[in-house]
Image 1 (spheres, helix red, strand yellow):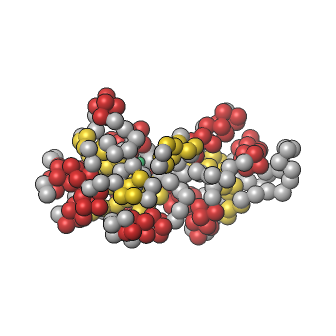
Image 2 (cartoon, rainbow, N blue to C red):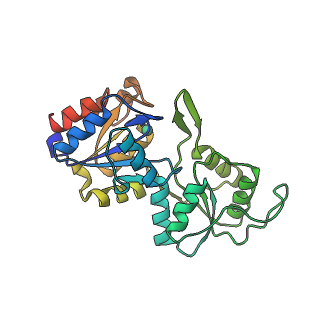
Image 3 (cartoon, rainbow, N blue to C red):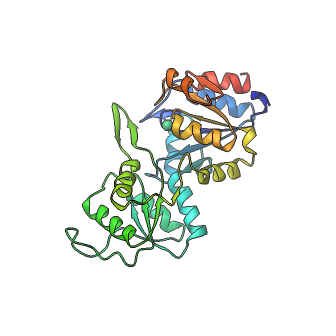
Length: 274
Ligand SMILES: [Mg+2]
């Protein structure tokens, strides 16, 4: 196998294709060149904040034309997974309104709150599963309901396990912080994780591309999610130094990624020779 055998390229978004509201240098042109060379392209985000339509619109706005079918998010993957494996569960979701809407659109029974005083032991007996996602409206009430449900044996699901989310100027706490808090206070572990590096998101990505993993390249800026997922799935991997990882960390990873590139322009050259 040589890089010329790569037929599908899966891109992480934050820190790989764009940062905040700006495309990263060379990214739009590089993706256009890969598409022109006949490569299938897919975008994967761990961020469950918005529906796929919004990511497609943002990519298009930043110069990377995309449709909702070109995008997979951890929220979409978890909603699909639960609709298939646990369609009758009543779910308490720690998440923001667009995620709740996406889960309900898949036919899931989602509750965002329960009656009762959050300063007391709340009755979570009707909850079959707790979903933890990136939620910037997280509060004590949500934490208490999730805790009570998990202590009663509810299933424990998460969209993504990122500790912090990159923002212009730094990072803000992500779902990993909430997962860690609930694991700490319940002594339990997450039963199913949808986002990178989980195999659930890989399955959806490969199904969408219609390719075997050895024909695919996973491109991202995070070693512990993007690169680890690609390696576990048997894909080619490339780390771009435009986001969370530096060259020293990337070189130190065992096994190392197949490619370490300054930006996507360099990657397009390797994969398409263009
Ligand atoms: Mg990233």
